[in-house]
Image (cartoon, rainbow, N blue to C red; front, side):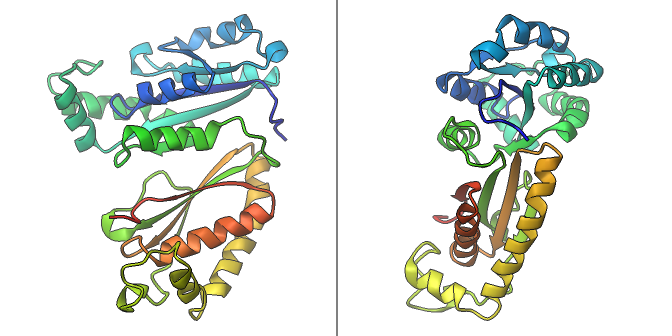
Length: 288
């Protein structure tokens, strides 16, 4: 089981234009040593140069398409670091193609792969990165995140507050009509519960308001559902931990993301916290 004080190396990677630089800046503010565009073959040497086991330095290394992404070298480096008791985690930043194109058009910067069009460069990069995305411990979809929201997400995942257990859980409520988050490990649909939207006195409230929370949790099936989710997570989280998975992303969706999903997400988070599990809760669409 991972020690919270163990030397820690984050591999920050992902699509160009998806927020790698912003994520690296946040980590630097959190006193990580950040190295940009490091060739994977040098990863082991850089870790040794920073004397991680003695100083407990936290290191973040940005690896992207500019270095060619030799996956065999990345795998070999991660295996070697694991043998030295260095905790390594891959963080993959992603976003929809249309959003990445818009960001490039606004910034007027060339794509690092340099194909004839930005769309062609994005497609080539996505194909190149797919195996690394599948290796990732954490995938952060920045399609609907601004810089401040991305900062909050990074801090919630990698801050230095003591955690009683290594597993960190992120729970997000959302509305299906605004799109399903892509970076989820588990998704629960709570549209089977009665919708407070149709209650005049509750319509303009949200799931964090006590009248809405009570309405949702008193609905037929709500308590049973939360208990079954609690039982499922109690079974799954130790299994994930045994496989060295440190982060679990859970989505709870309803129609608009204002009432049912918010209340249920808060209830699931409350139960996990009572078990000593570190939980971050976000309500993506609560004010949309």
